[in-house]
Amino acid sequence: MPKKLLQRYLPNPDKIKQIKALGFLGDRLHSPNLWHLNRRSVSRAFAIGLWCMYTPPLPWQQVLAAIGAIWFNANLPIAVALVWITNPLTWLPMYYFAYEVGALAMGSTTFSFEQFSELFSIEKAMALGTPLLLGCFILMNIGGVLGYFGVQWLWRRSIRHAVELRKFRSSPFNSAVMARESYATYQKFIAHHTHPHPQSGDDRSGGT
Image (tube, one colour):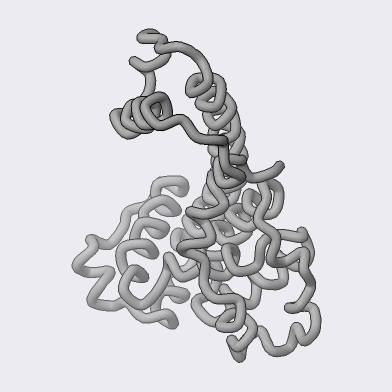
């Protein structure tokens, strides 16, 4: 998972620090550990953010994500940003899905989406009780596990792929290897061998 891709979409650190709900954290928000981009900090941030997105609505989700990031030395901007997956535009389908998951786990009947959307508000949603809460709890844990191990796998895969490409670009044409690569990689290969140039520091992968 390239650092440049993450940096492109990460929220501005100053904006994170200015979130009023996080003001109680004080100087802890300035800890350099919370802003590092490496495999461990990013995978922990995804686990925390995807876990927190099904907790009580904003701004509490941000608060919980920030506390989790501080506790586990995770990347704070990623953890806080991910909770916005659940927002006023996505609440209905996401909480209805959680409600369905919880009802399925309990073997109980459910409202239709139309009925659910008619009565939906945070207060009424909480009044739905066990099916919704159980569904949220199940999805929180699934999201956290998938987020952590998914990023770990993607990061390692990205590093392996970068190493393979370095070997590939410095070796003669190999049709078997080329067949596994994308058209964009093929174009880079042609450009590299047509106009060879020293490998730049930008080709180096993010650390672990």
